[in-house]
Image: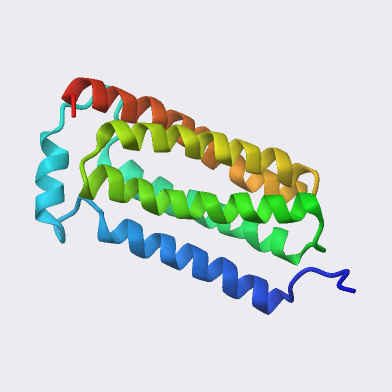
Length: 166
């Protein structure tokens, strides 16, 4: 009978692995000098006036993903329960969807599909925060900024989609 969560070392390894994999996938699709084709396409998009400067994206995403990784780590330390297991599943699903979003938007240039994916991520992260609240409140709070950012990202992606009509 297991009444404990994962060991700190195991939980830390999983959280670091999830964060690292997400960063690698995001890096693979980044609109920067290392990916000139993606960069050219992104720069040519007609974006709304409320689009943050590129430097803001570069600063915000690592912070949000690190906070989510800390939340995931905390959840993994908690004893298994239906709420904890659902929270961990939502956390893992969210991390996978972030990588999938960069693939849809930057590499495949599917702005409509990426708008739907951003909305799904915002809802999923909100569900994660609500579910984690019952298990570990600091873990819940750690993903709330990500949920808010993803809500904004959904509005932004939708505006880009409408302006560029995929």
